[in-house]
Length: 500
Image 1 (cartoon, rainbow, N blue to C red):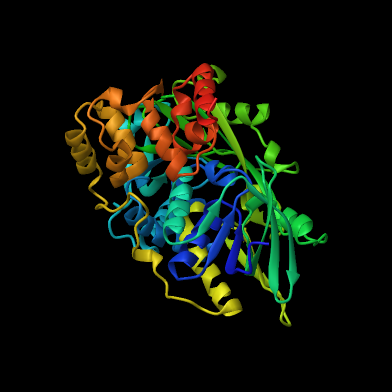
Image 2 (cartoon, rainbow, N blue to C red; image 1 turned 60 degrees about the horizontal axis):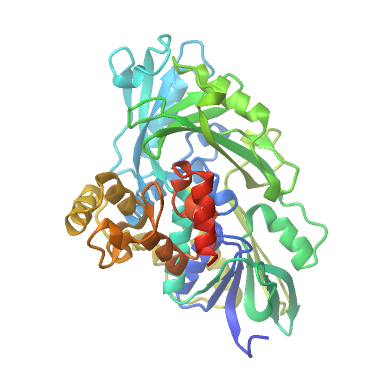
């Protein structure tokens, strides 16, 4: 056992909820350990549509509290991390005789504009698609559209930045660390972990356990805690395709499909278009989730109903799929299941408390963490006050309209950088991009070249500062250079990271 140290909180799960809770708790003065069995955002949190949004369609299901909270969070999160979060305008084409009448869409957008305390994001407006550039990629039958505001986020980076900040505030953060057993003993939790790569086992103690494992929340209750009667989450698969760029406009599209589902087409990584998502119940092991052929067909066919140039399988450069762990509220259809979060505390009569986190979404992760800290305070004693609303995530300490200025400053300090490279580094690391580059004065100073604009100096930073252990961590979560690097180059990177 790790000495006689008893930590305040042990968090299981390195997705957005687990890392957000760990960060908030560490900032309030709790001693925190977080264990993630693989890599940060290796599950649901990197498989999203990558939006910071209120959830326009949730209004149809009367989830007004969730929508209002999410709308209020858009500008809060934007200010926290203006390098990985930024505003985006969405174009919602309207067709007479479509699924939703114009008056209903206008009403929804009116509520969207005014119930969430919008201050900086521009309001909704109506577009004439015959004149507006947004109409050019669309079929001629779409003559009118509504344009509204939401936000975009690099989801996996949002997770790792929360983990980094939690560690900077004193949390003990561990990846490749699976919780294999947790039991109550003498009023505390005894937590046994196993390192996924070395097999080494360690036992720690904590006053409270937080189960923030997303799709595995019931599994953790069953296997680690010994509860075999649980069914709290409804697993809903969402899949996306990334295709060659379909339009050059910086705005995204919001499409309403005849089957009642909605879909987005979003500018992605400068050279591509992201199309998604699907919504269908999932019964398998979340670790084995992958896009199905019928989902590819659905996304291609649905997008082709709107774009003048069809979206074909041959256009696809990458796919990804994830499982959303929605709280099981008994909804008939997957797309109708609540996206709200539910927090439940177990433990009475002196038992060590357990907090289970069900559901949630990227946009409301900070508010979920605040709600979790209220539960934690009630269970083991409150520490500190709410603090995250006006905080900054690592690298985000510049004005929300200051991104271009940061790129200019980085380019001036490191004039050998190509403009696109400098922009990418600021997008990922914000004000910490200069620290990453260090004393480099030429491209050769960046070290070994792994393909695209990925160099050794960045890989070393990701290994030392952001827990990257494998090429996959670097190429698909910390960066998206996997879209630009060959399999052979990825293998060389893996060999380098493993010291081979």
